[in-house]
Amino acid sequence: MRGLHADTGYLLYRLGLRSGQLFNASLQESGLRLRHYALLRFLTTTPGALQRELSASLGYDPSAIVGLVDDLEKLGLAERRPSPDDRRSRIVVLTEDGRAFLRDTDEAGRRVTDELLGPLDAAERDALHALLQKVAEAGLG
Image (cartoon, rainbow, N blue to C red; front, side, top):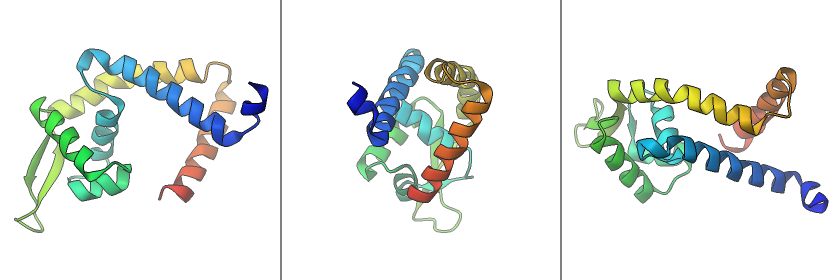
């Protein structure tokens, strides 16, 4: 394994997989997956988004966004509304139940992070986060 662990890209890939597995396990009871959570979390940063904006921002296929929003609407966590800018378009907004769900999952997210980053002290975690954020902002927009 040491040879594979010398490759930073591979390490990021493996850690991403492990993080996704842990997070999906923490969401299992709700019936949601990390993709749903990411969409909900994104909606906390915007008062409403077109589905194509969600697709571009999250990097998900547009057809996947439709299904994710359908799932979230059925659970009352998000809803489609007419766009204030164009009545022919619909925006996706977070509902109050969606906000409550995110508050309830914050602790689960911290537990996942703690498990994944257990070997690091607080300063190392902060440094890792800052570096990952810098790379993500440069490469993901």
